[in-house]
Image 1 (cartoon, rainbow, N blue to C red):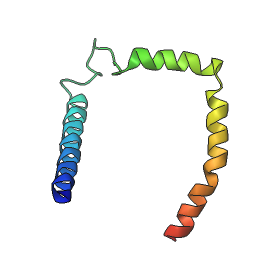
Image 2: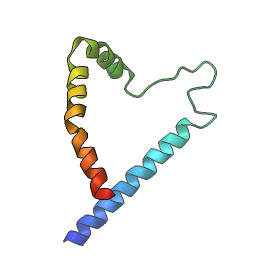
Image 3: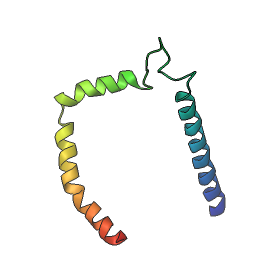
Image 4: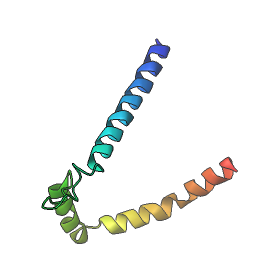
Length: 84
């Protein structure tokens, strides 16, 4: 049963990677890209990202991320020591 699960995981990762590559290739295409004259560059989640960008200065997210990075710094040191 575990071999089937492993095959399914590998197949789904391969399929997702192939789809992302196709979408990226189409976005970079000369005929379909956002840089065609008269076409605006649209972000997939533009409205949500704008809302988040406006909300971040009013919240404590920056302080939380800075504190989290400070606390987790030893994990990267440990990982590099194990890898080296």
